[in-house]
Length: 227
Ligand SMILES: [Fe+2]
Ligand SMILES: [Fe+2]
Image (cartoon, rainbow, N blue to C red; front, side, top):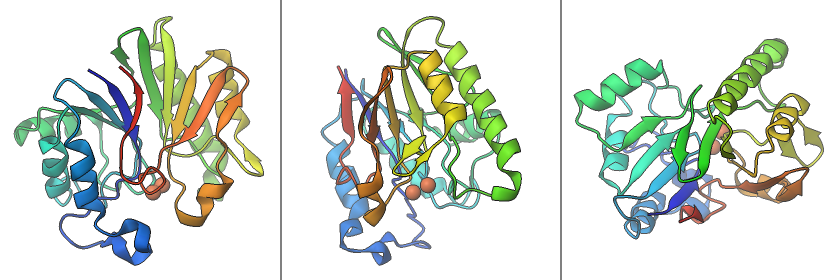
């Protein structure tokens, strides 16, 4: 039994959004993802840190969910900025149940327990987001993160965000303050692709170790967090 994380799988098994156009590093990314996951086991848990499917609705993302469900282990899905299929947790869970997907669950305003850890998280906010509604969107994300952190009930915390809360030349104080206050041990985030990888912040800040887990950064191999 082990815990893993990977973000930004950017699946499009309908073929509508081929990722190969984004360069050599995306070549055969679905097969490479499948091969990497084949080494996992059914009692493993993987957090998918957003930008999971290009589907515009639950129905159009169906082949991507079927692909994920067939991979070993449980997958906890976090919202990314490209997850246009995202709807309410109850609708997503009902959709998964109706299609017999037993390994997919939603990390949103909640947390999951894994051993001594609480797995918390939300999408987050990034400076490139809708600037006109920045205050409102950021306040909402901070509330979501706080709800998730509160659900940890005093356990050690691992936090998963889609957007980086810290980046070369940028910090998101509203979210970093929460990570500090709750003494989050590790924070994993995605969203950064290609040339922006080199601007990622990795390592220690305050109580927390930060790491980028975008699929193209990890070579489409889920990053093991712990047993
Ligand atoms: Fe992405
Ligand atoms: Fe993203």
